[in-house]
Image (cartoon, rainbow, N blue to C red; front, side, top):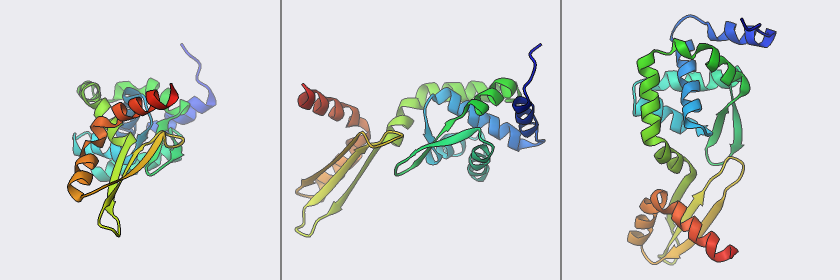
Length: 188
């Protein structure tokens, strides 16, 4: 049998709070583990309470902050959207207690992440916006964000709102290709 450290005992006591809160903490830690990347609050809330019914909106927001306070997740970089990642204490807690998450929920999370992880990463990393200039043209702002600093920040002017809106809508889907082409052409 494995001997527990004092830190592990402390973690066990925190995670054994009676009620849904401890299960919700484990669910979020499990989502972090399956996604294998830093996640924004917006992404977590969408995954856990909007796209699925693993927990309610307010429960999800509350649990994110409790996990941060308990040092089970931490902030990595602060771009337009704060990103969180699981800490070693969070991984240890998940390893010790993941069995408390109902098997059906674990399977549902695993399948959901398998089908949707790329879409969520793109949505989280690729940002776009546009605005009208004084001369009637539009500036389109395209970004690819990374946890520490933006990977790409591109602005360009287009003649009309229709073009700006089309670019805005396509950015998530086309960002990787645009970045690749620019990188290859400029760094060769």
